[in-house]
Length: 552
Image 1 (cartoon, rainbow, N blue to C red):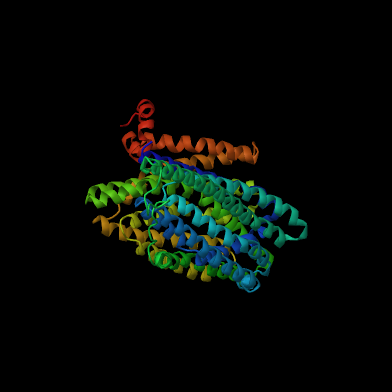
Image 2: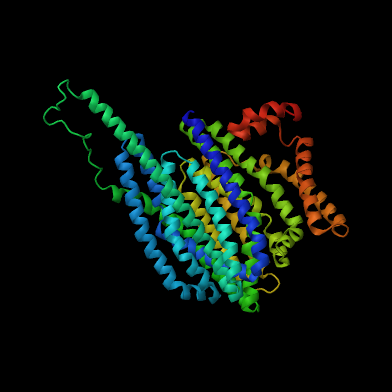
């Protein structure tokens, strides 16, 4: 198999693993929410931004530096340096991760009070070991990815997700009699358990790889020595018994840290702002007059259910971004500006086609969706958060495109500005009774609108023409509105006669028919365009699409 084929296989494996993880995260929320309610979910969700911030601060850009260095020295054939990079990164991960875990554990009582609910101490404490484990796991994965081995990361992700679901449900059920905060801590233990399973798999995978390498080296050395042994059977004087050692590059550890720290400083900004956001939102609900338990339940309905639903299409658009970014970089390297424009258009149009119906569907079907979770509190925030199902993936698509075109700093600056807008709006809207959680959802929508506008402005500068939003969104918007009106009528007509679950299932079956049929009927997408979006999978689709798709 060629390298290109192996890379495509690895990218497909990562995309499939991402989809499995996203579906698993969404499905586990159904029984978990019914078990611990939106209040318990809120306690759990409060701890996650702080955990992510500590993890990024501890390990940050080290895995990225590992991937870059491993890729560089693998190309040079320096396996000795590759192994030294792994050793240095694991040492750093253990030391920095251990220190960060201790800081999180010791500071958990103070942090829980700052977040607005002291009960979040227990999930924070349960997550402390995961800082070490996930740091090591990330090093292992990027080490293998630097050698163009993507499938082990995909397998580890699926194993991690399965373990996480099992531990989350078991621990939450066992600890529920002790109180909601302990059940939330049990849910947090799922992250620690999943990380442990992934690390153990990676250790097994690397030990197997090392054994194969050593066997190959011994065979190669023995065969070389037999070829070079004189007829007398005696070795010439000074002939080494092993291949001569080459000196390791000087300052390898410092070089790794120099590569890592800029990424660390950039990646830790958003998690820290998210921690601040949780505190602002929770305290805003308290100032609106909600008792602490109700304030936590509101946050749980918003962050634990509504956000998870609208972020579902992100995994699909992320796979599209990963597929188009290398071709975008190649087109820029050739100086093919028109090729760059076409690839940017294909990426954004694909995201629009996938995400617009999800956004409209989330707003129309908000009530039946949240009833699956047994939590009506999430209906209003989901309805107001629906546009994020489109704006969020479009924003991340533009981030990937800007980075592929060499603008690595602009997306982070734009996201930081947008997050500042959200913090200000949360501070204004969360304390207003009646707006409260819906205001927080609207602030999230505003954040992604600002980030997308800023990214599109920078993208237009690189393309030397504005981003053609009309071509990207008008056709899918018309089809999505037709679908939305159809779903609304169907849901209203079935709500009284059929069960709620049956009505939602029927709507989910009808939605793609309405959406796809309108796209084809209005010629909003053609067969040629769909094949261009399919990328490497186009040859497999072309034969049967020519039969069922009339518009070339």
